[in-house]
Image (cartoon, rainbow, N blue to C red):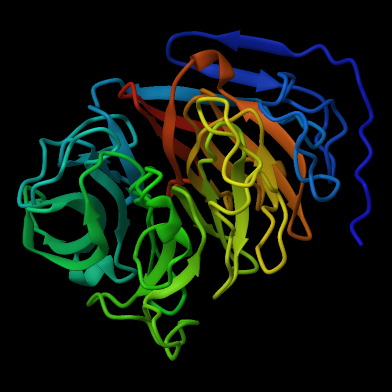
Length: 411
């Protein structure tokens, strides 16, 4: 049984200083759990929907005590979407129109890297998530997700290629996986990609949004609305939960997802976590377990954008997983990472998530796989934070839809 989390309301005066390029903040102590009022103060979209357990939404707030700074390194990016660190401390990122760029920790941008396949750059489609081979220093292999244009529509695809030694092009770009079926739409591609500890790729897909495609999130013979686990050659990874199930795709790892925009492995437990967009309200944070069904579109804490109920308007059902946490109203969670650096010790093992419509970075304090504290960072910047990663220097780096790259570190 989960014990309720008490909320102690504290009046706090927070000193904030901002500029167009930096943000610094200090505040009251962040303990094991939150002791401030919840950060969300707006009315929920679905006030009649009640959480399944205490602490599933609107947990107590926390405040970082360390003085930190969010410094803008560049404002010259064009719709950046994914970012990760190179071994030498520089960063490599995707731009939605189909470009890869390298940027130094000081903000100096490379020219666009050539050699990538064409992308379907419309709506939410384009060049999406990116990751590097764990042996990148030896093999220079890069892996990325993109929306691929096909004759019968488009789909979420995964490709790989070798970064040339002069860093001007990708050599031997090859599509290794396609999340079929294709669909003529521009929404919900998922698009995040990571390596697991076994050297396999973990990829997220979306269910393409439309009423006609939503049910495929529950279909084990579809690549839509799934977390997928494959080898670097695009084959189903060994040990996947549906490998021997008739009528199911062996590359599937979990299902019942709407539009997974964040993936991250916990640095201590190794557990896989994801976040996904709800419809209107009901954005979710989930801890992913092999073979589990995460419910969409059967259960949800959100409603349609029109204000109508989703399906049967139920939030719980047997054999369907509850989100660890949900946001109502939506913050539109996107890329995320766990903090394992030493610059700000109180952030250790906390989860950081870029929020699009929320226009801030979410900090979540976890305890025993539950959220016990929430903070909003860089609120005054008014940016749509698309992705966030930890650099080799222990700082956090975040990109925004408006074209900024931030370095977030101890001041």
